[in-house]
Amino acid sequence: MATPFTDTAPGGAHSIRPCWSCRGPAAGDAAFCETCGVIQPPGQEDHFARLGLERRFDLDAGTIDRAYFARQRQVHPDRFARRAPREAAIAESRSVSLNAAYQTLRDPLRRATYLLELAGHPIAGDGKTIADPELLAEVMERREALAEADSPEAVAAVAADARHERVSAEAALGAAFAAGDYPAARRHATRLRYLGRLAEEARRRSAMRAA
Ligand SMILES: [Zn+2]
Image (tube, rainbow, N blue to C red; front, side, top):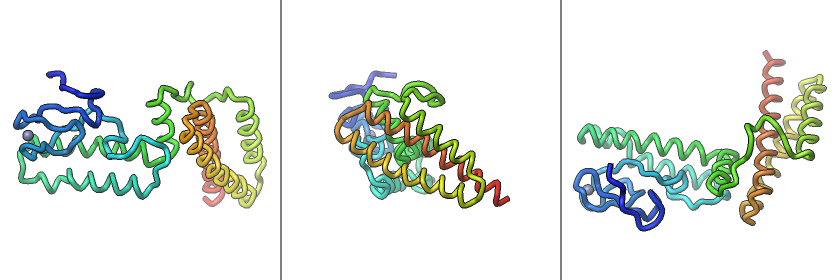
C-alpha cells in the first residue's frame, strides 16, 4: 500500500489520499471522492474527525446524534444496492467505523477516557485499583452504605445519591477539560467510573429484590 500524501498529520482532517477508483485526490476524511463521487474507505482519522466534531469534552448528546445519523445515512446499504460490490463493502466499513466513533463519543465516560488517551494522559492501571486515597475512602464509604442498605428504599437512596454525584462529577470533568487540566480530568473520570459501577451495583441489587 502506498503511503498517502499528507499536508498535516497522517489521516488528519486535511490529509489528501488518492481515490481508489479514479486515482484523483480525495480529502482524507471525506466520504466521497470529489472528482468521481465514489465512496472512500475510512481513514486513520480519530473518532471526533470521523463524525466531523470538534475534539472536546463538552458535546451535547443531540449534536453527537445528529452528526452520527447524517453520516450513517450517507453509507446506508440501500444506497449501494445497485453499485459495485466493492463500493457496498466500503460503505459497510465506513458504517462500522462510524458506529465505533459514536459508541466511544456518546458516553461521557468513554469520551473522557478517549480524550485523555489522545492528550497523552491515559487513565493508568486496569481501573481495579484506586491510587487516590481520597477517592478510595469515598468509594469504600459508598460501597459500605450499599452493603448495609437493608430495604429497597435504602438501596434506591444509595443509587439516587450516586446518580446525583455522577452529574456533578461530569460537570467537574468538563471544567477540567476546558481548563486543559488533564490530571484533574483523570481524577474526575476515575471517580465517574466508580460512581457508575456503584449505580450499576445498586441497580442489580434492586433487580434481585424485585425478582
Ligand atoms: Zn474518484
